Length: 552
View 1: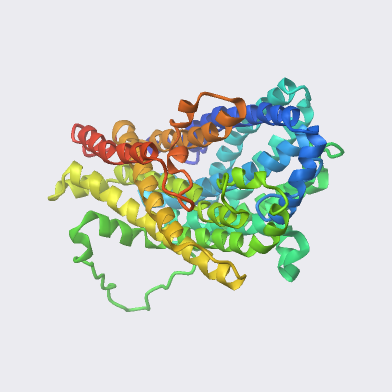
View 2: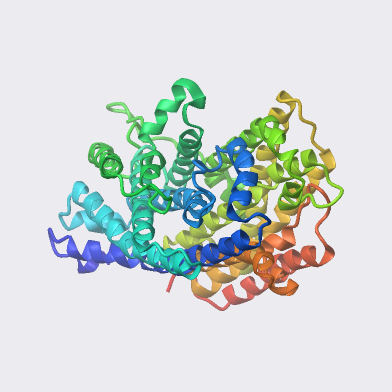
């Protein structure tokens, strides 16, 4: 890429940025668009079939929505398709887009420093400020087709459900695109304060999740509620154009744009003031001091998996902390949620309880099993690291020593599973502590099953990831895994709603995960996870053994 840069020219850098984001943009348009379209049709079916119609469904949902408002809020006009779709889908979609943007922003500069590719760009005379401005512009341009695609898909779903709203759909998804840009700015800024793109991505994701909860909770957090004014979700909520009675809020949109611009400006100032490949507040050696002594932990480096864990320890800590915050939040909500859920027997079935399971057990199962999407996201992030290792030459270095491709693949998966178990253990530990504080009692055997099956789920997704990395050997592997995860989730939701054959559910890893807090998953589900994990790893190793040591 850098070899084609002319001195002072930014066009090749912009072109490279757009090329970097093209696969992600296509996935968002296709997968996200299908999700919004399918959900609109599914909700229309639910409205039609629910006894009493949309008004009765909204009345039954509202108490539970109020009790669990930190997860998504406001729940306004959920007796309409646009209102329900906004509450059920758009709120969470904004969080996912923001985290996606943060991860991209974390790697825009810091990732290029890690790969040493930024050296060549700066060597052409391109200023540091120009690098950030160009990378940001490239991401903004990439989000334009994403917003358009999601907006058109949402409009198609609304029209197919009999409630067409093209303007509301386009405005809503345009605002979602701005939320992603704000997330990009936050990731870009945080990456100036950390030593790696991975750590910045994890910290940014935790920060955005906290802002999301603060926004949804409103004034219930006292002085902390003031943080919502620096939250992109707060300003986005002012333009919920799919909700009857709402439209584009120009002042709130301007505030959202100003927030994103401020984050980028702060990131630029930090980048121009810090040392290259160092965090902003790094300790500089004293004048006249000799070279720093570097101690290499050879005991850890005797195995790839321990060295991998050590190198990614800060990112792992961020993931564990984020998962703990999420489960602690769920535990703190339990008393309030129980007041609402106890009046609705059908909620037990929705949360996995089913017949003969108390609402209390169903809730604790739901709270414990919420680690599932965290595990999936963690695996996707680690997959990105595997691709980066290949591109940055670390794989070539390892294979030059007494490490074979098979050993590398296997030990990577070992490190991945250990990381999943650490994240899960910390999350469940936080759940137990807060549950005890609110007077709740959890089943130790159920928690053990959740931890064990979470590790198996991580191994299964890791097997799929290893195959994708071995076969594709580039960023498309991360995209492929994200598509598999997204499709698996949609299948479990849409299959029962549309009455699809039971075998379609068996295509999903989330179906295979089951509800281990209540009982072990079915043998067929465990078999699916085991097959993806063990033969998947073997297939990945076999493919890798036939490939080159460096990225093609």
